[in-house]
Image (cartoon, rainbow, N blue to C red; front, side, top):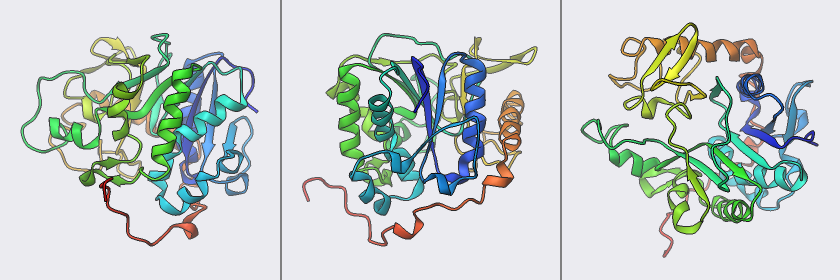
Length: 313
């Protein structure tokens, strides 16, 4: 049971990502006093080393019969995305004291307080907030890529305990039961592309466009990161959290695991320090010990070919 807290944050991991989750929790609690952080595990307690001082929710605690089929249907990355509304509903339903719920991907490090920006039921953040400086071609910074992977980034969102939040979570859960594959060429990309529809179907939605929230490789073209006396700023605002998507600890000199002329520490040297903070925090939390923990449900994965995603078929 989560201790009485008005604000709770959570992340979802497979066992091998435990060091990332522990580092995220420590960075969040350091900067958000009086809040709580929950690590939601795709697995049972028997799949993790015994850990004290951490709040866990294991998958078998989430009482939803739809999950059994999802374990057979989805690869680990897809399942981690698909379970976000299921864990959110569980936290809200089991803990009446939670009034504000924050989701953070496991590859995030928190540098400041995540302030409540609004009284809106749902808060989401866009990948990009400016329509200038797009690079030419069909690469990771073009407008077509935003349409391919989603206008909004699902690595961070906030929910208040309001009716519209529950409507949204139930709608999202319904879709993600079967439509959370990573198939961007077929207009399906896990949980994320569905968020592009959120304003069509739901009210009371706030878009957090602040540059110091959810900074990541996809928006560096519009955001300038600087350092002053060991503190980091994005477009002159104190960095709240950075999203280290596509970064690999085994490649410490690479910002991302693909080639792009803009995305290098040579091009943006201040980010080398930002990434080293993240890397060291994960190593300190036992990365070498946890990185080879097995995925508990590998034997359940179906070998069937993924279905075509034309809803009228």
